[in-house]
Amino acid sequence: MIDCVQTNNGLVTGIELAAQIENLFKQGKLSNPYQQTNWLLEHFLSEKYLMLDFAVNDIRVKELFRSARRILAQEPIQYIIGYTEFSGLRFKVNRHVLIPRPETEILIDEVLAIINKQIDKNLLMLDLGTGSGNVAISLTKLYKNCKIVASDIDSNALKVANENAKIHGVNDQIVFVASDLFKNLTCYQGSFDFIISNPPYVDFKSSINTQSLSFEPKIALDGGDAGLFFYKKIFQQAKQYMKPDGILAFEIGYNQQKEIAKLAKTNLFELIKISKDQNQIPRVLVFKSEK
Image (cartoon, rainbow, N blue to C red; front, side, top):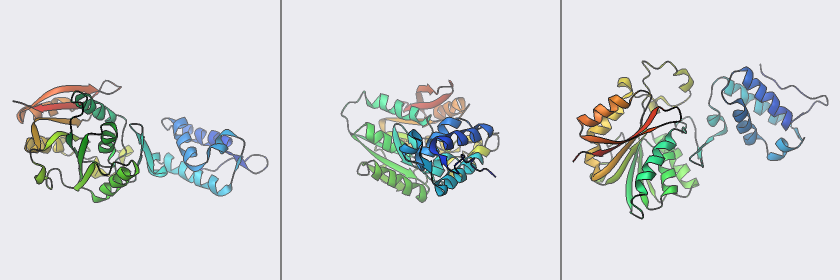
């Protein structure tokens, strides 16, 4: 059992707690032990405990080490503290939603790069599979002249997304819809300037590192059919819902670029941009309809 090492007077300070927990995380070979320690202590303790030599009460110490045990058992710290940072904003998360990844910020950057060529134009976008609402909310914060329809099959995820939209004051710019892909969106046919999606793309049959994802909702991860199931479905239906000059933008998984490009060609979409992540892995593909 993990326990704290007390100081000589029977108490432990915030500074000492930070050192102990970071050491535990290092022993457990966690990635970014310093960052994870900081997140944990910032959530549970006020700044004075970290800056000065204040003793921490026993109840709070036990909470911290209980949370440290959960992290060592590979539970994401974001679920423990209840939020994550994305695109410079804080988003509420729980086990009903996928934890937003930094790579998804590339998707936002690419959409904004196209939008910025259409200054002051009012745009209607669709965020398919919105999850926590991180993509839709970030875009509405960064581009005021847009309305976004944000859909998800999971009503529990939509509750989280709604809460996040209210927290960030953009709930009047986003319409949340419970829908399995386009099923409940028929009233929007021919309407969207952009369709954006970070669909489930993990191939659980061949992936070797799915254990690390075990705490996150499988419905938001499992891409079936070699991770390509949702891309196939979206390509087949997207044109019905896009304007003639509309844009379709995806986040994709590792080593999926070629197969997704083939799907695009089959469905008469032209690949116009490939963006790579910091590891030089293709991460975002942008398409337009072939003329």
